[in-house]
Structure formats: structure tokens, C-alpha cells
Amino acid sequence: MAITASELVKDIAGLVTLPDVFLRISRLIDDPNSSSSDIAKAVSRDPSFTLRLLKVANSSLYSFSAPVTTVAKAVSIIGTSQIRSLALSMSVAKTFAGLPNALVSMENFWRHSLYCALIARHLAKSCRGCDPDTLFTAGLLHDIGELVIFNRLPVQAEEALLAVLDSQDQLQVHQAEQQVMGLDHAEVGGTLARLWHIPAQLEECIAHHHDIAGAIRYPRETALIHLANVFALMAEVDTLDLADVSPIDPGAWELVGLGEDCIAPAVREAREEIKEAEQLFTV
Image (cartoon, rainbow, N blue to C red; front, top):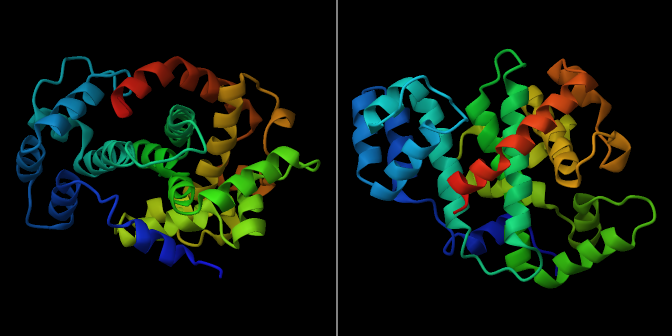
């Protein structure tokens, strides 16, 4: 019997829940009566997250002129909404770290996700109105539905992966998933994002990064994640030739207002940053 994305994520909700620190930060940010001081206090209640946040604030992702030594300073110079995005990024990577999965290398999964995140952040700086930290988080989480599928439908997931390997017509993973299961990882990831009450922009980027025409509220941000996903593949296989990777939806270029000349610097910068990013988000 076919299973729905809602049933899949409901089944996994007891195994993977967002940490209290993210939930506290999120509630405070949504509260118009809270202050940056309140948010800094909420962060400081979690020593592990505090340490990670300060490492990120002092990393090359931000390159501040002076060391960031306190949570209050990190919150004030990074910004409250960006703090929520960073909290979500670090929380999800940690939350899924122990989820059983025998189908793919978790190291490879997170490296692709981080490449996508770094490239999305780089591209967002060239797109007026796009927040780099939010797009970083969207890139990091874009394939989170795959982990749910790997854990809950391992037999079908393996069948889909084998179909991709055996394909003569460049069948993509999400297309194989649709053929085998009647759903794909983007749909599952978007459904999980709604269950977790993740901000709508992130939800739409996750749910439609393979189907940018379906993005209604945030089409440009979703198109940016679509591009970053493909560029991440290029970074992984060390190529700048679009013929070597999955095809790009032509509409994505028009939506983000960028051209192919953005590929090389985005890929190059991500390859320079990937080792530090792995230390910050997955160790």
C-alpha cells in the first residue's frame, strides 16, 4: 500500500525532534516583546550550542574584524533572524547524526548538503533581497527528506538508487523516487519542515528545489537552491562543465537574475570553505 509524506514524517517525529535551544530561540524571535538580550540568554543556556555559535561567528563565514567572544555580541552583529537560521542548521545536522542508515555514506550526504549551503550563501550575496544565512540553512536542509526515506523505506530507497545507476537516460534521484514510491525526498522534506514549523521560506525551498514552478511565495529563493544543488554536484566531482551534472531548469536563471559566469567563483569558494564548514556543522 502506498504511503504518504505525512505518514512518513509522522512516523519519524518521535525519533528526530528539534532541540530545545532552537525552539526557545524561535519562540523569542516571534515574540514582539522579546529583545536581543533575551535571545542571547536563551542561547547561553545551552553550553554546547554556545560553543558552536561562537566558532561559527569567528569563522571565515563572517570574517569579522575583531574576535567574537560573547553570545550577546554574536547575536548583535549576526542578527536575530540569522541566529535562528544558524541554530536550525546546527540543530538538524546534530539531530540526524545518529539516525540509522545503511544506504549512503552520511559523510557524503552532509558534504553535498554543506556544498549546497555554502554555494547558496555565496549566490545570495549577488541576489538583492536574499538573505545569505537563510539560504545557507535552506541549502543545508534541502535533501533532509532523503534521510527520512532512507530510514523508513530502505528497500524502496535502494530500488530508486539502483534505478538511477542503471538508467540510460540520466534519471534523477527524485524522479526515480516518484516512480518507485509515488513521492520524493523534496516532498517529504517539505512536509517535515511544516511539522517542525520551520519558516515558510525554508519550507518552500526544501519542498520545491526540484520543481521551482511549484514555488509560489519564494520562487527566487527556491530557484537559487535549485542552482546551488547542481553547483554542489560540480564541486563534488571537480568540474565546471554543466554537461557533467544534472540539468538546470532554464527558468532558474531568469528568476535569480544570474548567468553562467557565477558558477566558477561559487564552486571555487565552496571548495575552499568545505573543510572548515564540516568542522563547524557536522563534528
